[in-house]
Image (cartoon, rainbow, N blue to C red; front, side):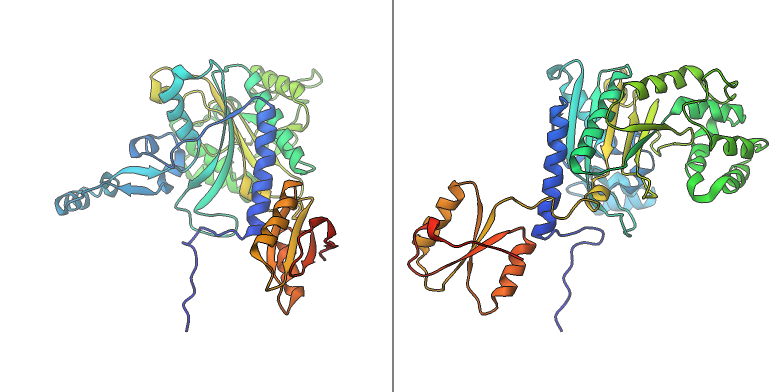
Length: 419
């Protein structure tokens, strides 16, 4: 019995039609970002293990694939086992996101870059996830980042460019949920959550849509946090929006008014997409320092991308803080929502030729059609022509013509629509 051959677990092959759809989407995203003044860069698939495990990547550091050092000896293996330090055997690792590599890139090339640098990164990343539906060990990220801009202009540009990309892809109904880490900090302070428990408490709040108010209160209580009043606050937050400081009612105690004003200013400046204030939006990364945002869609329970401000990250490399903000489109989630015909070419031609047709004549016919701007494929005529055409249609071809032996004039070919 033949053995089933598959890609590594959690990774995928893409057939021509899938690849064409993905490349069409990527081209659309790249074009939208470039029109908004962003420049594309490329970084290595691997980074030094010390950078990938420096505390910048949050829980994703635990999912990093490590690359073993060269020349490992049995003594080194024994020492690592005794110290229970398998990571000590690695000096490199596959990148688990594009933000840590960008921070390292900027630290490496700061003198060669403009004072405000707008970067595009579109590349695969790797995480040792437990594979399941919609979650892979290798996947593509589409990031834009602005480094060097401390004001809200960075957030406005990022959201506007992302909205343009979403619109160009033909995705309707998307909105942006927006919050700020400083509002979350104020919220925790009103609950008297100890500072050392803030990050852990935020992980629990991030589960609100999954476990509800009661689940969040119970989990916070299990951490030893006094939960008096938390349920009432969370219930009232469900009605939070842009009306919280409009003069009709006193603002809630947990609302940082200065930060809220900054978010309203961002909302007023953004065009092309609606922004919703959501004070329970957390975003899992511990490196966020200010504004955070996610793409939402009314028909989906998961986000289609997100990002935020991470002013403290680059300073870990340079020794001096540099303001930074980024937005990432969840490409693997978005590409499955796109119209499957979107990647089709307007004029993709199949030349179905006789078995005895001369190669020189076929190549000449093909060349004249290619020169006119068409995509052209040669296919030898088979007994089952219908199957041949169905395969070509799946690959994006729209018209076909039969080519007899001795045919040399492309203008004389009679093309018919496939399908």
